[in-house]
Length: 445
Ligand SMILES: [Zn+2]
Ligand SMILES: [Zn+2]
Image (cartoon, rainbow, N blue to C red; front, side, top):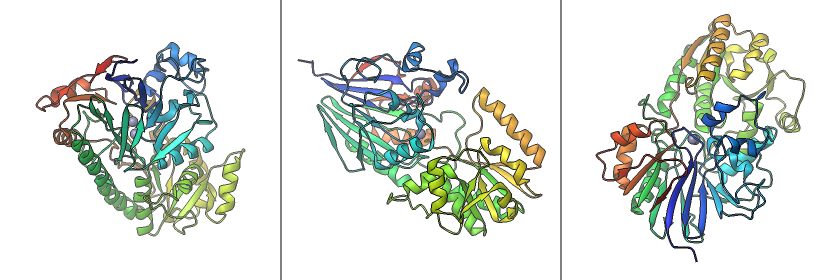
């Protein structure tokens, strides 16, 4: 007979942004919340594609994958956890599902399931992202899932990828709230309000909160981003090149509306088109049809063509354009492209009056700085002025403080941050005690 005791253990997301792996135990019920890839730890040892981990055991060797029994598919022991709940589809929360025993069920939002499946179809399965054989059980807000001693209530939150959830976890020792990644300045901030309301009602004994933006915080919104994009596209005489995350549907919609308003088409990559097409069935998302006259699909020049690419091209034959075709209608196009598409500029030859909009985070580590330097060289070569128009996917400090005050938990565990100590001091006048989490330590409720 297991002693009835509820505990929280953090196997990732401690002193790092992402890599969340949070274990909630209640008696003999054990559930993980998120099982993400730790980009920070991984880059200490690896530099893909030439220096990549070969097995899950290699990742365990360096603590990139935690030492756990009965969890991984490469371990012979019977399953020792009941389920994994995934808050959203970003890889720092979901990628290491790859290693989970296939008989352990994965619970996630319907949208997250669509995103993970689409991602797995458009990229070759590799060691660190392989969802084949996983058993997905999906939920939407309003559903309550009972697992042993736990009852888990997912509630939608606003984030920079659709289908993000926070959780209210009812244990035998009171409720634990987990925010996942969230914000209160996006296109659907009322979803975050719903979450805060549910969390407050639960009168939690603990909250596990993301605390990404303790430095470099800004005051802006997705609506303001759209206004700024409109002003840039409106003034530009040439092609507008735009870099933004292809899973960020709100940002896509901002660009789509701005392009349309300025009598341009938004050209997106085949990968983004495939993902958006998969998400079109989602009632909450309002994604235009790929055959929409204001959308084009950009085909990069390359020798191999995958089956999914061919199918997509057959589905919208009039929409697909290559760099040469786009070069003939530059002032009619906003082209979504990434750093890895820069080679296409050689064929495209941006004309005078073109510019480049970085609609993603600025570089925040050494590797990104190096690539950023390369990007600037390309922009200099083609005379492309660069704008930075972005808003974070994460909550800002004062908003977070006011939310924590409202939810009023007894204890606060910051995760997904490099600034836990700063967070602790900043939140020191709240009723709840802030605990700077330590990895693999068990906290009793
Ligand atoms: Zn994250
Ligand atoms: Zn995220």
